[in-house]
Length: 368
Image (cartoon, rainbow, N blue to C red; front, side, top):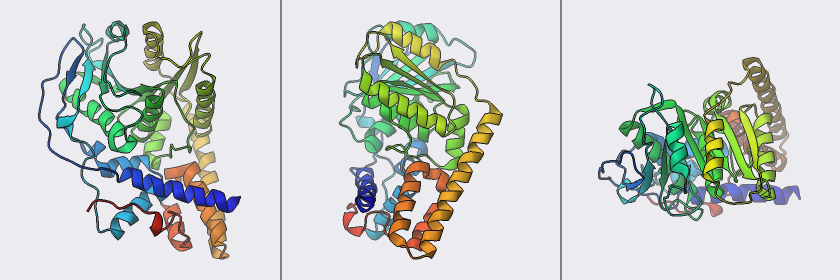
C-alpha cells in the first residue's frame, strides 16, 4: 500500500508538470479604456511579473513540484515563456460603484473567478457593490474547464494589476473570490499571493491545505497567516461543500491561519448566492480581525519544530540507505508543509537520489 501511495504521489507531481507547461505563450496586448459607473466588457493591457509563468509556478507549486519543472525544462533545453496569456485576446466584466470611493484611501476591489466561461455580474449584486464601495471584475473564458495555472490564475492576477492602475483602490482591501470551482481557484490564489490579496470570499468551494493547495514559500505563508481573511459562505443543504469548508477551515487553523470564518446560508443548496447574501458576505469580508500575535508566534514555533523533526527523520532514512522510505517521507513532507520545508527538502531530495518527481519517463514535453 505504501508503495502504491508513493507511486501515486510521484505521478501527481509529474502530472502537475504537464499542466504547468501546457500551452504557455506570450504576446503583446492593445490598450482599451476601462468603463466607469456601469458594467461593461473591457480588454486590459498591462502585464506584470507577478503573473509571469515563472512567478506563478514559484508561488503555487510545492518545492519538489517546482524542482521537477526546472529539471524537465533543463532536460529539454527549454524555458518557460514569459506569460501564459495574451491580454489582447481576453475580455473582462468590470463594475465600478455609481458613487465615489467610500474613503480617501479608495474603493475596495473584488476579483471574481467564475465556474462558467461567461463574464457576468450576478443579478442584484451591483446595489451591494455600490453600498460597500467595491469594484468588481471577472474574466471571460475562465470557467472550470480552463487551465488553472495557464489561464484562471493569470487572468485573475492581471485583473488586479490593471484596475489598481486605473482606479483609486485601497491596497489593504483587495480580495479574490469565486463560486464552486472558481472558489477553489480563488483560495489557491489567495494562498500564493497574500502580498496582493488580503483575503478571499469562498462561495461553495474549498479544499484543505495539502490537497492540491501547497503551502507557498515561507515569507509568503507568514504574510498569509498574519494578514489574510478567509470568509466561507455555503448553502445549508449543500452538504458536500459544507464538509469541504469544515476540512479546509480546520486545516487553516492547524496551520496558524486564524482569521477564518464559515457561514451556512439557510435554505440554499449549491447555487449562486443572492444579492442579500452577497451583501452579508461583503460585510464580513470587509471586517477582518487581526490575529493575536502571541498565539500566532506560538503556533509558528510548533510547526517549525514539526517540520524540522520530519526533515531529520528523512535525513536519517537517507543515511541508513532506506531510499524507498526516504522517498515516501520527502513526498509526504512536500505535500503537508510545502514551502515551509524549503530549501532543506530540496537538498535531501538530491542526497536521496530516489526520484521524487516520478522519473524522466513521466516528464512532459515542454516547448523550447
